[in-house]
Length: 192
Image (cartoon, rainbow, N blue to C red; front, side, top):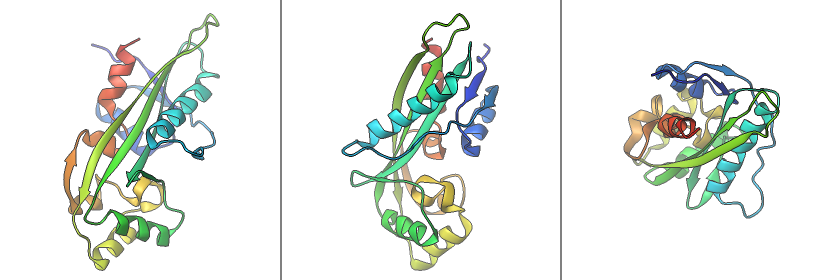
């Protein structure tokens, strides 16, 4: 079996690593889109919309390609928790996750373009994974903020790094929490 080459419409090093882990050949082109949530938009609609917009933005300049877009967010009590603005914001996010379940939701979109000018076709879906942190002390929160490089991560943590010390349970796809539910990517690509 040979996996078709993709264009990853993302600058995320974690998404690149995951594709590399499974042996997927890909090129990277960062999609520059507005990631502001729309008023009244659910977290699921939000991440799927962004994944589609990223995929389509790169597809416009990539004939005869399969373009992968993805977006991940953390959701607590129905509220989108994005990337922290600063270290204080990261502390607040991690404190909010302490001792609680939250959802990690990723939207994935794959756009197939043709070389003959046909309109691109996009297929998309979402993946949701539940994550439970143990009760964190102030010292443990500070450790995660200082050592966990929280600034470019939804929810201010990386499950595959220091946060692993404090995660009690995961319900669903681990790779989704890292940043890309690669089995869902495969399912969408295979659908073409």
